[in-house]
Image (cartoon, rainbow, N blue to C red):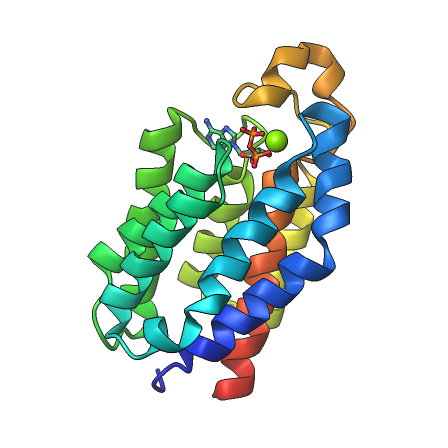
Length: 200
Ligand code: ADP
Ligand code: MG
């Protein structure tokens, strides 16, 4: 894999969150407390503000620094969970990963999120997008195919009943709405994938 322009990936991620913040808020209003758009925007703008410093670090250190920043700034349930994803990815990844080692590290990072959230696939959370994305990477899918899989996976949370997070308080009434964290995860996957392709 070519050396990543991490600042470019950070900007792409922050851009997509900024553009979709209101949509994420609306999703979280339907079955949560309506803060997900603002939470994510605050966090990713904080990461963007230090994009230069982060991208000067070796990839593992950069990812850990991003994770720490997200934990400190996103808030809500999703802050520690997205933070854990990046922190664990930083711990597991090598400085110049190939696709196989990136996929393995991503798998470990998803396990760390599940442990932190005491959650698993099928409970209408970000994990319902993260896991199919991992499987797409493992299966050799392109960035564009992986983005489509992520979108479909977020869409597939609509008929699910939430079993974790605030939406679970609604029980059956959580059915019929997309999970906000699943949507934000799919947005991040698409933007990062497109930025990596553009770099290659
Ligand atoms: P809060 O729920 O505290 O208001 P956010 O609105 O920022 O925080 O984030 C909500 C999202 O976090 C949900 O849509 C879901 O995807 C994710 N989430 C919440 N709890 C868990 C959990 N235990 N495991 C995995 N993801 C979770
Ligand atoms: Mg919320």
